[in-house]
Length: 291
Length: 160
Image (cartoon, rainbow over all chains, first blue to last red; front, side, top):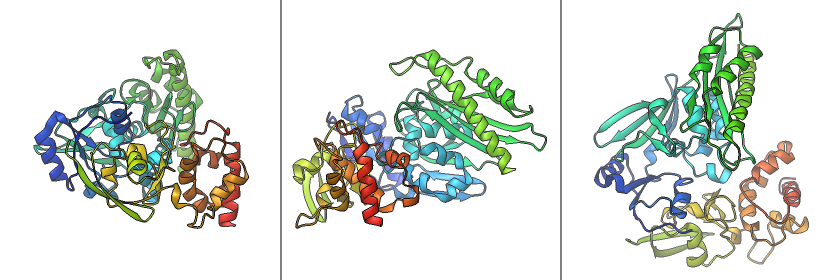
């Protein structure tokens, strides 16, 4: 229950960090909040030769709202996102989601960038960010690129990040005025890993039809699952119980969640369907209130 | 592995040591600073027994390395009572409501809850809010009921 030995660097700038990652490649692992990585080290499930600790790279600790985007530096702690009134006004889905992340002690240390880079399909922030159409800015000594959620999340605990790349920023487009939102999940105990969940954004037109729908599912597959079939079923139809039921059924039709000690695959699929219906109802209500 | 020199401020005292980077902060606190009030339970961030305050915020000391704590200000359970042994109102409330039995988890609860009982809006102090605040700490003895009572009592005394 003690971590294996490793070499340790604590660079103070992005450039210095990228230099270290370029030099050490696969042998190095980035340490941000450490709320997932350090347990893996303590269990000796991970044995990197070197940790590159980015906690002193304060240039990545920013949360700004400009030109219709919320820009979240990769080092922003989850608790800062949770407390930010600006973020809550612009993208309320994120506050609703981040409150489910672990416990207060975890959120005080864990980072938004770390949640993304760890890529656990049962993690709340990647699912919320997928629903929001967030863009992930990634840098290396070779240059910079921007990835969408579908490109970023490859499979269980695996992203498209190359060993020399660092996630530096998450850019979240601010949803249009009148967008309803909901983040719903179920866990056996508050703060435990959720067995299923859903993030939803809905916009309803004056005639009651759905003019925008974004749905992402939690713990539904190896990555955050964007339920595009459900979105298609919602679009253009009168928004209500009937369309929500059809969309939820369609969303889980092809899912094969993992069976484990906490629940069978069938149970989880039914659970996600029920949670998605609740999320759609809640988001629909909020959309109507907002218009 | 290359050792690193760290200077960590704990409860107002600076502890300077040369340590391996892999030394957990919880082990630094107990074995180097000899402050054994901080307990180590699961060592993977689940039980909350090792909770301390880093710059005033509760964190799990088993998920930090000692080398990361240089330049930060730490508080452990030893900082709660006064020098002449008078208990902090939260400790006193735990004592009076029997909010502990074996006591192993207690220091973690206290360090988690101290900012909570100070800052919570008394109008929002319902059972759900209290239980959410202590959800990151496990207690195997009390069933939590008396800990919830202690939080209410301490909040009344501190804010009342």
